[in-house]
Length: 260
Image 1 (cartoon, rainbow, N blue to C red):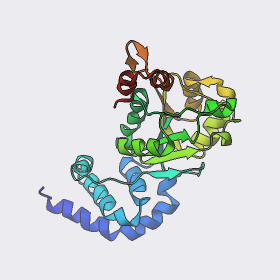
Image 2 (image 1 turned 180 degrees about the horizontal axis):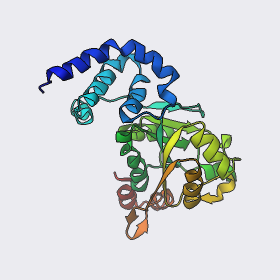
Image 3 (image 1 turned 60 degrees about the vertical axis):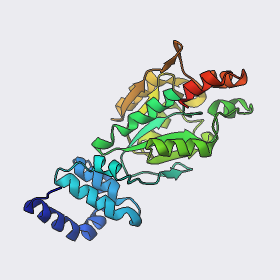
Image 4 (image 1 turned 45 degrees about the horizontal axis):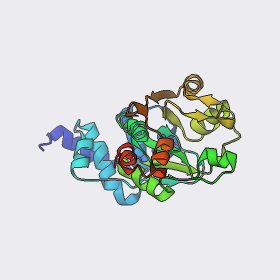
């Protein structure tokens, strides 16, 4: 890979500016609407010290018009997924997949993988999910899980999720639809885009659906993408179908829907 003299000058100038930019980032970049390269540097500078070399190198390559994303995957350079167990305020711009995602079946994967497409716009692929099934929590009935939380975390990380909020559903279950979007998605998670499935419900008692999510989010300048169902044998794949198949020892259909 040949780098021209002007590109080398950019690299030298950038590396001399690292300390200054770290200070500037804390006070300005995290909360700004800068162009894509500056949105990316905000993300890169938030990483751990151990991986800073690759992060700075990535930003430099972005300046000199070299696609580091492909190079990153070719070199198997990965960041560890950051996990939050409470709704901590986020300054970085997120693209958030919403759902419980039990089993992380093919339909779930379509929702989650959509967040990765927004990385090129400077948004961090993220997931907001819960430590327990919302329906089981509200009804007080035992939960029959397909995957436990550790398995779910591993699958999400392997898919490319970089920030995971896995929180107690009881902390938000009494919020109205408007409160959830404003207080959680906008003010806490700093979501610029949200992705959900066609049958997504939220708000107190699950009274709001995906179309309501899109309508309210537009008032807060949050882009919304609603993903159509993934079909198996002409019916939408769901965690309920998979549990039913497992209950009746239909491992073949269960594995097909789980993408195993």
